[in-house]
Image (cartoon, rainbow over all chains, first blue to last red):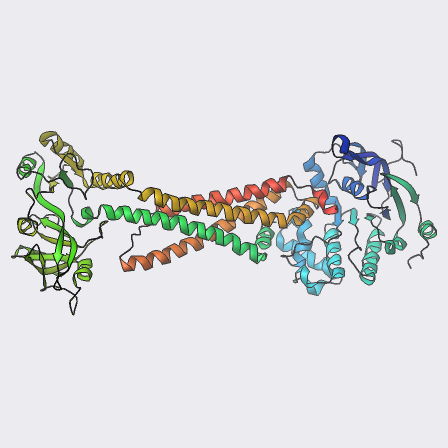
Length: 250
Length: 378
């Protein structure tokens, strides 16, 4: 799917001609070379590719945590390129949920306090935020462990806490960076099942960067990246299954 | 978020204890050093605290109370003739040797008070009577003298006992409370007309003249008048106190040495707290970057760091001051160690601690402000 400036706007993600390079002079390296990407609401898109192809850089730009050297990026109908830092920060706080590879839970806080962070960043009172956090933890099956610290939980449980934290403020975009790489197959399966159910919400879109081919069967679409550009889109679970020789998720 | 900032800090027990320890130690060193300095300085003018007078008249060259250049006997008449002087009394102040029963000698600070008025007498006589000082060969000693002069005795020396000063009997008729002197010797009070026998070999014995102003006359005005009319030097109590202190500041190594202690405390505080806090921020870099990625503004993170740093500062300061109070109480009970905690010392220590905390926070803020949230994706 080739995007042009005339393509119809979506409410998910639309990146057009993104370029990003690092370093100076002879050591300057182009990581994104005019990358286009589209993610629709109500779908889960997997962004895959070899190490160093630019997946993380693309994800960072979409998330607003890094600015591109050139190109346009539109997230949930808002143009992030050209937006002031403070505005982008506020946008992230209200509209984007993050799931990190290493969970990034604060070890000295209880999991309820960890989950409440996005609400606190929006200015909610601590008591209210924690009450909602406990409710969301209940939805991911960890309600009874709300007072425990992350170190007392298994990897799979910690990732579920991270998912709860990513969802508590009801963001429209969920950005996941290798959400299953630190998990065993059973925990990884549970996490992907959860993410797929979240992606079914037509108000949301989910983008996952991953190396883990165990996750391919859960995707609605896949974008394969190579040398800083999207080399191929696989636009249905069947295409993904054919291309990678896997069975579809039930 | 601020509450979570404190929980992040308190939850990292090792770092928290190290931060608190650094500030506590710095507070202890700075405050203890300053209190020691103030205590020593207060001992330098202890003769003035033990011999009370509003105006001290001295030789023009005298700068501090422990130095006396004897005046002429006629000088007291000249001072008495100055208008506004309600009374003027002779005072001897000098170091002498007391001979104990076992034949050993101890150095004492001998004070000769005006025989008629006993002007400048100690404020608190705890045993015996001040008036008995007018009896022959009598002295009043302080509590330190009991300790020093009791060597060779079966029981502590006290009222009714005797020792010798320059082969002359010194019979104890009273015990008083005094402030310790810088030179370390106990105070022994007697009358001025007895000094000639206790301190022979000195042609002139008049160390100071103690003048009292008449009704409605300020001590400072009287001092200036005495100086103009007699050519002698006259200090109010306050002026002589500061002159004595500044003399010791200029002429001894005390201020430099103690200032070094205080400075070391300050530097230790900065080094330990700054380094530990920076290390705390470094260890939490990914968490802070994740917070940034999730939408925490730089201002929010900076406020968190400032709160953490200030919390450590206040808690460490509180513990440090608590320790200073305990130590101060213990040393003051012994009466042997100079320690004076003026209100300015804790205030100055608090300002120093706040500076240390602010510097530590700035180091952390500098790091956080440059933090790229994208590192959480690496």
